[in-house]
Length: 171
Ligand code: HEC
Image (cartoon, rainbow, N blue to C red; front, top):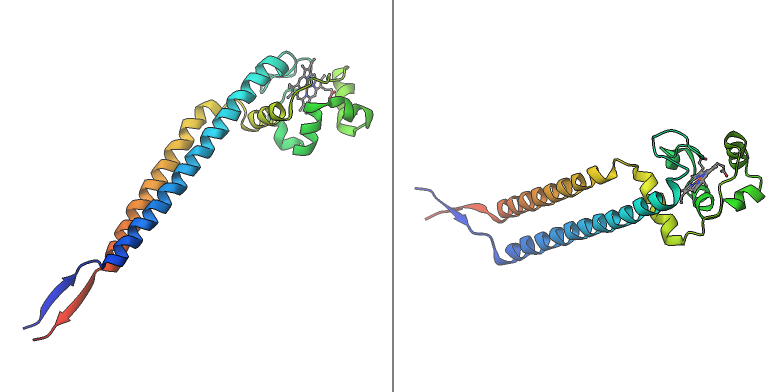
């Protein structure tokens, strides 16, 4: 009579499973950490916007003293935006065509606001995500977490399967 025996996962394979899971968890945590940093800079950007830009600009609320900034990160290039926010006078002196058109349309130049590099980057990040960002932020954590957990479970099952072999033991 044929006897079948299931061989257990060899030790090395178990270590491999553990190592892979540790790696996945590390990657997952660093992804979460990145999102926390993004969240921080988003908060800073939001406060810079509220304190320095909101008097003249809205995001999606229509033009005030200056243009509505909704979708501005899509219609203008990053480097251009950085100069425009940090020192719009540079564009004005260069007779930058967009700046000229904006000044014609709005009837006055945007003033230099003396923001630091970090404040400019933060407000740019905020403009890039727009006002919807605060509510989508928790939505970022959950998919990352879920994807990570699913990966761990899938990898473990996969490795356990691989580690198992049916062998025939003949008398
Ligand atoms: C005193 C009013 C005022 C303040 C404060 C102000 N802006 Fe402006 N902004 C303007 C005006 C007016 C224009 C259009 C004329 C120009 O470009 O000089 C403009 C243009 C812009 C543009 C170009 C938009 C486009 O569609 O081309 C961006 C981007 C911008 N501002 C961002 C900001 C940000 C970010 C802040 C805050 C850090 C800010 N502005 C603060 C008045 C202001």
